[in-house]
Image 1 (cartoon, rainbow, N blue to C red):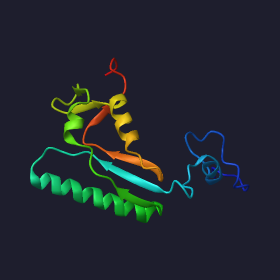
Image 2: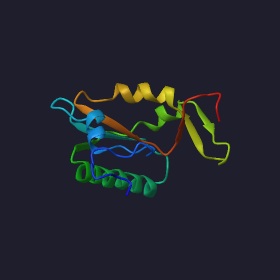
Image 3: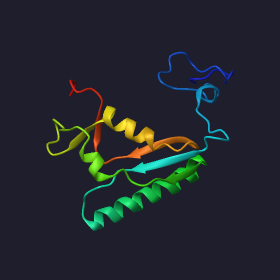
Image 4: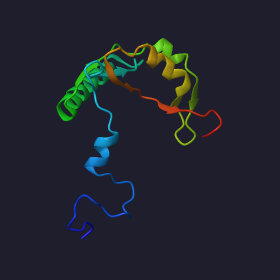
Length: 136
């Protein structure tokens, strides 16, 4: 058996695992003034059918988050496609035609739209993000 009869002491050789007690000590938890998880979709320039599918997926994600994590979740207005176009873009080396957006330009935009009662914000983007202009 991996565990001895004393269940509160997991084996030392376990890589990347965490006990419930360890998790509770470091876990972020909503408080009275920061209790809502916000979803921030990116506006997509696709056909009408793709836009409807994208909106439906965000609504399904909201229902899942509220059910699974038991936290209130709200959908914010999508980040404007024109704003997204102005973020530095490069193409993925392994997947030609697949765009990557430069995250240091994106994060200030998202932070400026973070509501005061937010526990956090989840940006929903169809793009890969990159942080270092020199690394590929």
